[in-house]
Length: 387
Image (cartoon, rainbow, N blue to C red; front, side, top):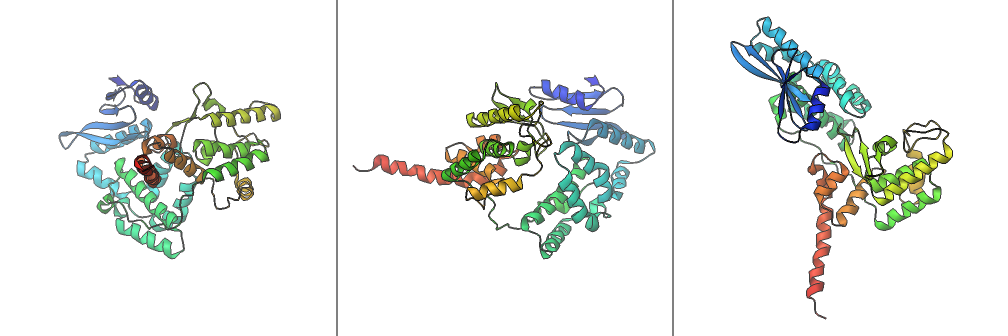
């Protein structure tokens, strides 16, 4: 099939594609094509190099846009026209430094396909730039990641922060490899060694604690912040997702909430319970009483009519009143998952409800299912027991 390759051309065909794949050949550039599947697409360039017809993988959509792939294909063609061999093309990319890759490729992609670039910008400036900025990509090895981990530990960083820095750097280098910008060091094919974080990572609310929290929130009144906290409890959604929720993505008929861009850059749909629907109704009633104009944000700040950026101070007071001072807002997400697991919902169903892209992330709750089974098996004793 022939057409001019663009982001729209890809997404429109993905929407109509039920199964299998379709290849789109570009009408403007000879040899440039994209292989489209329902949830991904791969850009390729078919070109004669060293007297042989070769297919060069340019990268994947949506990580790479059609324009970026076209520019990369053109650069390859220019190298070939100037007499470059296949080896020359690979070797020419070895001069790319981490700083060049970050500014020219990684950061533009991250800003496009991730919800918040502030964290990666801060991490690059404080952790990567001085240590690796002028290093060529292919020279950064597993030993460098170990040294980074050791140095950050010496400086007093928490294990979670150290692991995040190590994993993110490897992920950046893998992007460069996936996009055929530069092959990453062979030692990085193995996952890096991570520090064991002995801190208590998850906190689950008991039934009594959840009821206590709800009582405090309802006594404080149906304000946007209080309603947003309740909505987190009943949807398991992330703080930022809830604070930035928009009315246009709420489908009251289907009882669904669509999040256009999640933490992993993909959209997802949240199924809303009866309680969650009630909370939305309270939010709508609040806006009708207090706002003079329609507002797009569900839990909008009454002063700015925009999303709240930080609700920490309110949450600190709420949890103190509920005698839950060790509970974080993110623990409401953990509590949502634990409640479902203890009610008999499967790990795979919880994965879908939380929006985890990989079930291994949801496996952190597997021990809860095991505990529930230990309690369930006692029913056999009761069933066979003597009167």
